[in-house]
Length: 364
Image 1 (cartoon, rainbow, N blue to C red):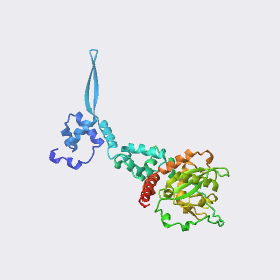
Image 2 (cartoon, rainbow, N blue to C red):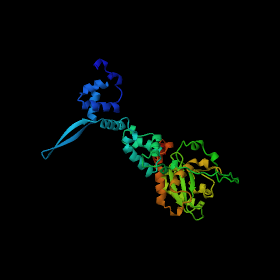
Image 3 (cartoon, helix red, strand yellow):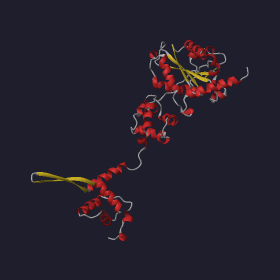
Image 4 (cartoon, rainbow, N blue to C red):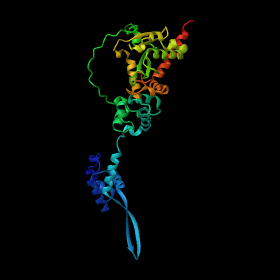
């Protein structure tokens, strides 16, 4: 076959088959050169050269003569070896998955989700700000969930609070008796507070563990703009216990009281019956409508975070002030999507500094 009749150009993009490799092995045993084999198979000489190099192995022969054993080595192309090496290289070729390059991100993400209880969405967006790695190695939220599903991560779905399925029982509507609002209605709350345009407006509520007259409860205050949380353990669910805690909190605020607390919104529980008397005169107090928990959406959402640590029916008797502080710090350092993945603490501090500057500009 002459070069002009070669089919090399027609088969340029195809890989060698096992049949062709077997032909190469046979032709090599017949002492054909690489170029001759290339012409016979219609392949380029370089393709044949590479294949023979890939499939050649060293073998040993020995011969006994005059009581001595003589050994010598020789090289031989073996079609099976060439095919095996080809298949192995095919497995390793192509684009590798993103996770194979992202070990630093994976280790960091597992730590955040397992130890700090962050959600995958928070992990992804926060990683872009704090990790000193190529941003292309950080997956999107959907991809991170996929990695968790495929068990590429140490984190499992059961470790993710948001993915736990909840069995909800059908609720039978109950007829509620009319309940009088304890003070100024939420209907009179200014629109700037309703729209969260300003800082210093709080929702106050309680978190109950085990039910019982002598059971302690948690008093929670959530700042509506920053979602900053304050958690205080109080003796019981009474107006007196709430009043004692609030007077102590206002004392700690000191000169910053007017900057920190401008209004409070509560429900109509009897524990807030003396709320207006318990807080400083300049703090406006509003009460939501009876049985309308959605009017205090910030508190309801914040309580969901607290329940991660303190499920319902948990006795608060064993909960210490240190436990409350630990939960509070975790919540305030948890990046929020609603805050563009900043933490409540970061937003709270920035707002407080802004309030101080504004106060400094007011002429004496």
